[in-house]
Length: 277
Image 1: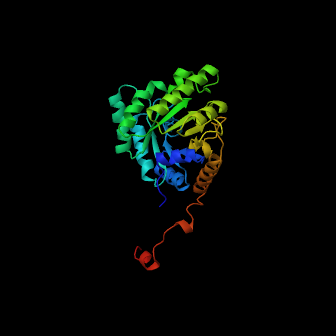
Image 2: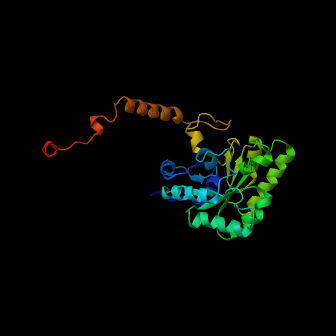
Image 3: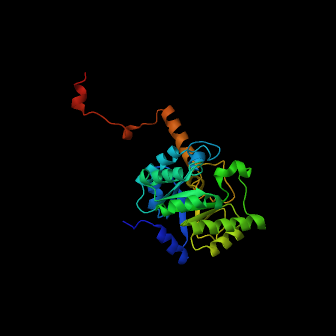
C-alpha cells in the first residue's frame, strides 16, 4: 500500500515544487474513487450543505452533519490525507468548544486535520489546536460561512488595501501554525504573492495557477450539477447528462417490461418447478 500522505509530505511538495491535488468527498464510495486516483488531500467540506443536503449556503451545516460524512469518507481512504471542515459556529463561541469539536472530528470521525475559515480573528484558536496536536488548514479570501456578511459570493482582495489585509492574515495564520492555506476566489496576482512569501503550501480555488495546489468540489469537476458553474470550475466530465440518460432508459424499460430480461432473472430447476403443481 502506498504510504499515507502527511502534512510533512505537503511541505516537502511545496519545497520541491510538486503541485498538490485536493478534492472534496462526502461518502464512502466517492472517497474510495478519489483515494484510488491518487489525489493527495480529501476535504470533507461544509459544501456538503449545498451539494448533498440541498441548502442554499453552508451556514446550516452542523457538527453532526460533518461528523457523519467524515466517518463515511475515512472508511474508504488508504492514502489521501482527510481534512474535515469545521462548520459555522463550531469554533466561534469559545476555545473550549473549538477544541472539543475539532477533537471529535479526529477521534470519532477519523480525520487527520481540520479546516477553519478566517484570518487574524481565529489565530488564537488555531494556536490552541496546533498546540494540542490537531493539524489545522487555514482558509482565506471568499469564506462561504461569512457569505451573508460579505453580501454574496464575491471575489476578494481586489483592492490594494484588501490585498494587504489578506496578506497580513496569511502571515498571522502561518505563524499560528496552520500547515496549509486555502485561497478562494482572489486575484491570481495576489495568490502568487502569498504563495511565494509563505513557507506553507497554498491550495487555490479560483486563485490562479501559481498556488502550490488546487482544489475543486467533486460534483463540479464531474459535472453532476449542470446549473451551477462558477468561472473557476472546469468540468472534466458531464455526468449529469450520462446519469439522466441512464435513469430515463431504466424508466422506459421498466414501463415497457423490457427489464428485467431473462439474463437478469433467476429460475427454478424443472423438477422442483413440477412439485409446485
